[in-house]
Image (cartoon, rainbow, N blue to C red; front, side, top):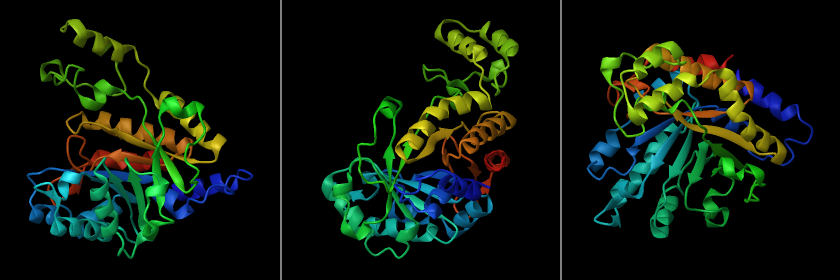
Length: 330
């Protein structure tokens, strides 16, 4: 199990814990995270009532039963603004939503988009009354440690880690931080779209994972230009657990070197992709992450990469989502 493996990671390296004040319960909770990016994501058409009812206690319980241990909620300024001003009724919905999900079973990562400092201050002020700050993690695109209000001192933060930054030490002295990274994936399969934005044509059949070279070459023969090149590139690729692990290893090594936890985020797969291929992709990527004891966050509950069906209170989890958990347990 991830909890035991992460705990073993901390105890198994001399001095590793000394400069790693991220609580074990926090890094363990981040081990099986799922994005909620359609709630406070800035859709101006969302009414206050719609925001209030977008996710329910039943949805929280469904995610817990499905094996997830945290959720990451995206927050854009437009979700709490009306006519350019912070709307108190909409703002109050945010701590209510966090309280609903932050429990003994789930942590909440609040991912804040870039926003005006006054709007950010209002968001932080709204969090001041939270009783479950021990279950809160903050990922703020626009703030530094010095910007953090005192009422949130001690809350773990998430910092970005790009491939370009792997040659440098952490720029932030705060060690109570987790470093989120993304990596290259089988883009054509994940998005089911060409780089031009055009959808994968149904007439060619199902685009599967792992890539089947001979089948893909036959498909490519019916295409031309850049689309043909993309399919042939996918045919030549060798996506498997070993390749996925190879791409994660530089981030893992950076974390070991600098005594920081790293966190795999930003992966997912179009909900219209072949179900068995989608399951295999999830199984492979979480198996690779588990082998390096890297926690992960998958996208997402709803939207193009949905791992659920249905609406608030009546959602169900797609069968291929179980591959995420089975991959982690390997």
